[in-house]
Image 1 (cartoon, helix red, strand yellow):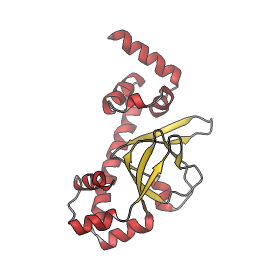
Image 2: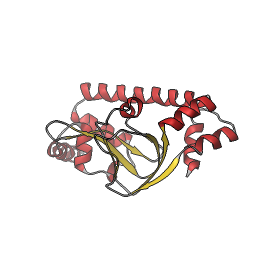
Image 3: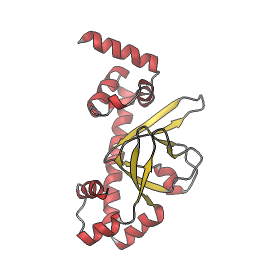
Image 4: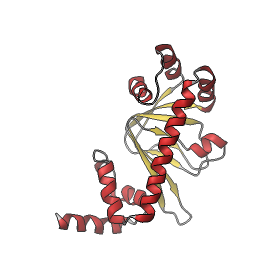
Length: 193
């Protein structure tokens, strides 16, 4: 279980064997069934997670009842509601497993303890936070400047092994369009080939 986590950490920072073992020991392994929730709106997010196996969607339901997918988390991705996790306020998000999944969870207390006991961990999360900000900034720019057709093609390019695991409704919620409009885009793209 922790091999994938260790590989992920090693892409960002170097830890000694005892540091790596001490940090990985702080995680709890959770198995979650397809369609089950790791977090629901209104709950306080008490974890930061690392996806070992499966697929999750992180989404919000707006005032009109429409789902807005912030992101999908696949194997080797981190997952949380950073706002709720950081502030202790109730979450506005849902985190749902779309496949039978396994995730390693670390509590806020254990994460902060790691900052003190293994100072390199603070650098790990700083680097990951910067990468997340870059990805979110790029997504915002794309949403403001690209057509829905371009965003759909970018989505397929970015998630070539995963987009077939998602429904049209889920992809449309990520792109911020209706599933009917997504169907029109797909027909238009197929017609061009």
